[in-house]
Length: 108
Image (cartoon, rainbow, N blue to C red; front, side, top):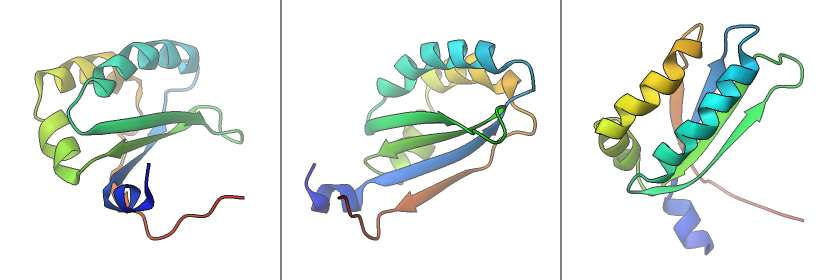
């Protein structure tokens, strides 16, 4: 993807604290939920990463074409209801979600 396109996309970051002991169940449900988010308009990609120091903590990174694709398109959709039913009961406390825009990028 050209840099100009990446500079316009939005990165959603959510810290997910999963109830201890339910990590594998959460990961299984997340695999199912991945198909839902990947089908949404404006979706580019996502990653779920597990914390090494705190194994019940995850970070969800989702790239969107625009903020509205996430906040209005996805969250306002019937598919979001499915996402919520699959995942939201695993979180304690409920995650904080924030959005970022690319300032710079460098690879070796």
